[in-house]
Image (cartoon, rainbow, N blue to C red; front, side):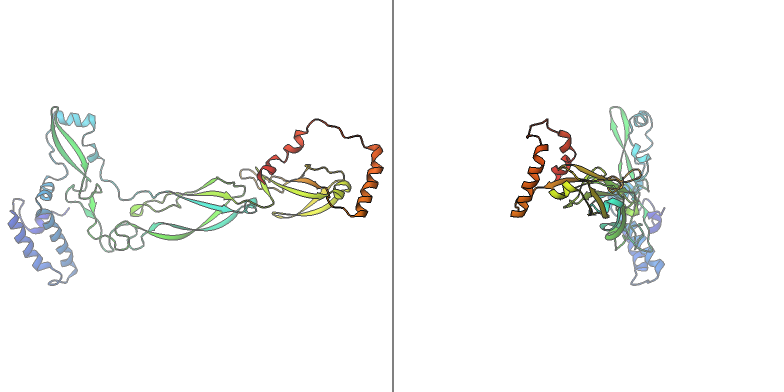
Length: 366
C-alpha cells in the first residue's frame, strides 16, 4: 500500500504548510505539461491523491488512525463486542463490487398449433450486458482499482464508543469507498464504472410441446449481468396460448365441433377434416346423434411430461334444415309416413346429463 507521507516526501508530523509546499514542488516536476512521460503522469496522480487526503483535516485524521480506529482499549468493551457483535462488520471484509444480476420475466404468446410439437423463438431482450471496454473491471483500460486510504482495504471503519459498560467498538461501512475497500480513480468511460451497459440481444428459446397459459419456463443465467461483471440472473418466460377460432383445449386433448347434415347423420358418411397438424380422416356412422363425441386417438397435444399425445375429440351437431323445397318437403313427409308405425309417441324421459357433459368445457369456451 502506498504511504501518502512517503509519496509527498514529508514526515507524519508535517504541518499543513509543509504538505502544501511539498505538493507544489512535486507538481511542478511531474505535471504532464512539463514532464510528458508515462511514469511521470502516474506519479503526478499519486501525488495529487496524497495531497487531497492529507490536506483535508478529517481525511488525514482517518488516514492516520487507519481501519482500526480507537483499537487497543481491551477489557470489558472487547468482551461486549465479542458477544453482541459490535464491530463484527469490520471483520467480515470488504463487500464485493461483483453482484448477481436481477432475474427477468418475459411474456411469450404462442399459437395453439405451435404447442402440439413445440416450437423455437428468437427473443430480442433489452437487458444489461458485460461492458466490452473494461470487461467488468469498472476501471478505464490500463488502470485498476486502488486500495482505499481511509479504511486500508477493509471496507469498514471502527470507532470506540464510551458507554456505562465500558468502551464498545462499533463498525460502519467506509464512506470513502462505500464498503468496497477500493476506489476507482479512473472509471471506465463506456459504462461509467458500472462494469455493464444496456443493450439488446437475441436469445434463442426452445418452447416445449404441451405448455399452457400461465406456465413459466426458467432459463438459468440468461437474465441481466450483475454489477462489475457479476453472474447473470435467470430469465423466466411466461407462456400465453392464443385463442383459436376452431379448436380449444382440455388438458392434452383438442376439442372441436362438426356440423353434420341430417341426411349424413342418418345414412353415415366418411369425410376428412383439416386438423392443426394435417388432415384427419373421420367416419360418421349412420344414426349419429347431436352431442355425440367422436374420438380420434393421438391427434391432440404432445404431453409436457411423459410421452405420447392426447386425443382429438369432435362433438357432432346435427343440422336440422329450416327451409325445404316442395320436393324435399314431400320426401320428408313420405319418410314420416313410413316411420310412423314404428315410432312411439313423444314422451319425456330422464335428462341424460352425461350426453352433454362431454362437451361442457367446449361450449363454455365458445
